[in-house]
Image 1: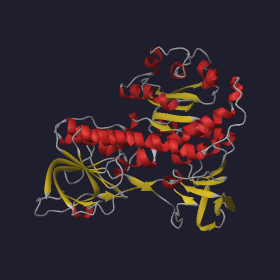
Image 2 (image 1 turned 60 degrees about the vertical axis):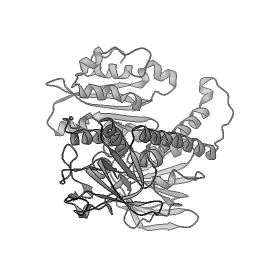
Image 3 (image 1 turned 90 degrees about the vertical axis):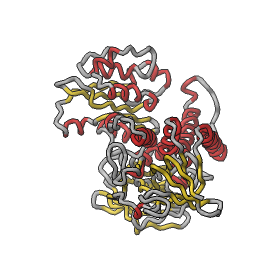
Image 4 (image 1 turned 45 degrees about the vertical axis):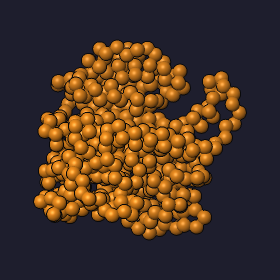
Length: 473
């Protein structure tokens, strides 16, 4: 039997379920189709479980350093089974929360795989959703006024580098490891690769990172790249840049070995396991896009600034449209899309106002332009930079590495970018995000009184440093 809805959301990840809740609050009749678990990659195979493991790694590292705080603990031991149990408990708790939100919002959840049909007896336009039910029951037909595609993405690998889930893994499989390896090769020095490198090093695993580009974290400000390279090396992580991994040289026995061309020379790298972290691919296959006029270019769905596809009643958000591929971006895109289909006038998202975070140790957070990007765009810049080693709260924490860097337009004083590396900076970046939204100047940031002692004082000092007025440096 066919069911009619104002909106059907394909995909119950962070972007999809947030959009569904917003649509429900606007009074729309909403259905969601999800083949796996509500919460999607972020909750089950990404943001949350990885941060739970990172937190355990942080506690393990801090416990080994407890003598520095006058606390004698003896030599700590790691129970990785309990680490995984804690991670799963957090995921399960949040999963139940999302399920509760769907019930509270009266969102009908169909557990199955949804495909978009072309014009048919159900509708003269493309957009009817056929749901292949997980239960094996007859397909459900959903007839919506609007469709929101939020099918997310999946980990990529290198051509010829086969993922077996045991010795050669993506982050999906690595999150479910029952035991830690003695050693690990990580292919890719981007955000996910560096988070895993930091985590594994803190757990005591011997880590080698092979990055194809000249620098790790290629989207970050150059000063951030340099500091993170130094800090990863201080952890004992072997960082190899300009490394062209030769997938066809992979050998597996008791461990893995692979060759990489580094500065024109071939080098062999060996470890117990390998983690492939080379980006993610949009989930656009087999969802019925061929039955529509939707344009897919370079593997991602093309939309306008309100996330409408070429089919004006079909929207798409999140990883499936490429872009920044961040959970909070997908959520915001979902809200904009739903408000637009409800004939409201939402503000289009400005990527320069989106904070990004890396949950390694030390953490990294940024918003806006890097110094190189600002120069490339023709700005004459002025820069303020302030180290955490001059901040009392950082000394109290025993974590003094890193800095806050603020970039401003020399002519207008407008804030162009804020970049941080150090303790708890992912919890501090929202102040800079608000400053970008309000088009603030460094002077205005400095005028906001930062309480003492806090780590956030580094933001105020960096803002003053833009014009050479910092107090403690």
